Length: 293
Image 1 (cartoon, helix red, strand yellow):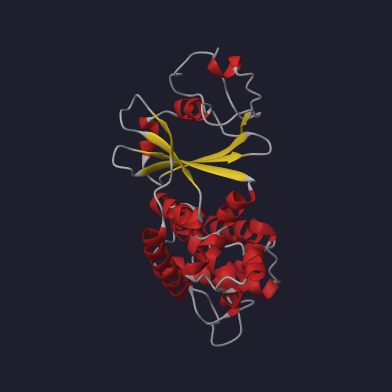
Image 2: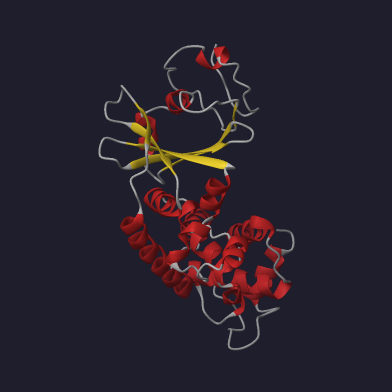
C-alpha cells in the first residue's frame, strides 16, 4: 500500500494520469483514508492466489475501482469499504477469467454483467443436474436440521450461490486446461470449480448445514489429510448459523468424520451440547480455537 496509495493519488491530482481516453484527473476524493481503502483492496486482489500485476495494470485497477466508487457516490471511507466488499468477488472473477479486462476501457459495470451472466447460467445448470446431496446427520434440536455432504460441482456451485461465498465461481484454470472443459466461465465447467476439484481428489470433504426446508445455513470444509475443520462459512448478512451453534455443528460432524483440529476463531462460544466432549475425543485443537472447561 506504500506504493499503491501514491499511485492512486497521482491519478486523482493528475500528476501521473493514464493515457487517453482516460481523463487527466480522476474524480475521487484527494483524501488519504479514502484512497487507502482502494489501495488496500488492490493489494488484497494482487495477493490472492499469488497473482502478479505490472505497475500499469495496478494503475488501471486502481482507476477502475475508484471510478466505480465515485460513480456510486461512495466517497467516505466506510462507504468505500462496504462497496468494495460488495464487488470483490466480481472483480476477482474477472481477473481470473478475463485478465485482459484490467487494462481495457471497460469498467466494473461490464465485469458485473459478466459475473452475473455466468452465475445465473451456472445456477440454472446446477439446479438441473444436481442430485440431492446425501444426508449424513440429523439434529434432534432444532428439529429437522441436518448435515448433508456436497459431492459434485453442481451442488457446490448452488451452495456457494445460496450463501454468497466463493464456492460458486472459483474456477481452477489448471484443471480446466488439462481436462479440456469449456473455458471462460462456461457453466458447463462446474466440475472445474476449485472446491469440486479438491472434493474429487479426496483432499477435501464439504458439508452443508440445512434447515427444515433444506435451505443452506452454513458450509463446513473438512481437510481429510489433517482431519481438520478448515472453515465454516455462514450466509452473508444472515446470522442463521447460530440457530445451531458452531460447537454443536462440529460436535455433530464428529459423528461422521474423525476431527483432530479446528482452525476457526472461538468456535466454542455457545453452550456446549456435551460438556468436555472435545477433550474426551483427544481434540488436537488449532491454536485459534477456544475450549471451555
